[in-house]
Image (cartoon, rainbow, N blue to C red; front, side, top):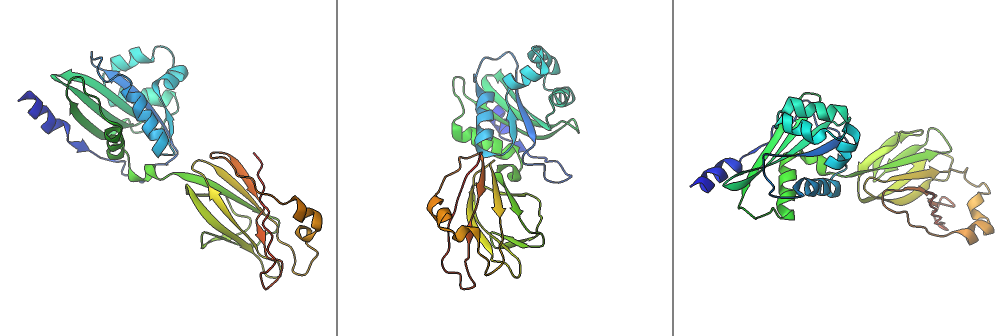
Length: 279
């Protein structure tokens, strides 16, 4: 009977998210663990950290990292907080986090696993889930994924990368993925990743610059667009540039510089693909 009663309460998921808009999907979040005299579910908080690191662009810190920043007395402070949101938010404030995810483990016949999402600035609980697990059981990876998906807003699970387009001319129109992004110079673009994007930079009287880049999650790609006047003796038409052309693949999370396809005439024939990478 106790198990049935606990399950009926524990499977409730409260998802009261912050009302003032979607939070920054790259904000710093720390995951802390509070145990109420229970040794069950060892390493569960570390599994939450791993799930968030895989599925989001959040700056996720585990308890060991938080301890290095806060001090060795972190665990004692957590015990004194006993799950109080205001107290836990002070910890997050000291380590410069926007949010704290507090993973709680206790036992009442079954093992009770709770997770609270605490907004550091507001010092309030903005989301909470709980589940009941049989003694000796542990949540599967799929269950951990389900927990964090219910706890955090959907926007956190969209990963992003940055494309920085730098042109040698101002006033050139920039199109990325078929969408106009304004005139050069433009700010670096934060875009969903992983994904591939077609880039076009053009200005009347100049040969358009086009390329296609692969944007890795949490990575940055720099595109240097050099436009030349039509009919000019462009540097990329010279034989020694053609001989040196090659392809280098940039690793995820790094910064790549792309020198892309340039149309050599109004007909668009004779295209040269020159791709380089600088880390």
